[in-house]
Length: 107
Image (cartoon, rainbow, N blue to C red; front, side, top):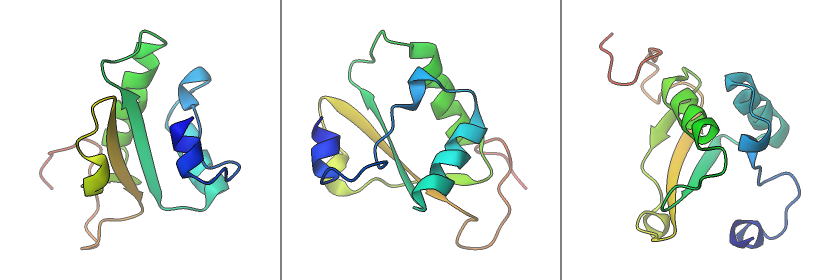
């Protein structure tokens, strides 16, 4: 509820994708529907027992996706006790390099 409130109640801004997640295409669909290039992935601390494997899969898909790249989260969201916030940007890296499918891989 707090995230929804911080979004000023904007419809379609906050999604709980773990309920019906089918794969990376769901992340791209959400990006296309929202029109935003920033995705904040939020998980509970400690992790929830509700669909934990799906949550892990969403994070793996974001980490491996050539369309999303993780960047530093805003300072006000970096040290929250109840949740972990990760920030991903949609699109190519700023230097124009092509991202590999595995984080940390060398080109």
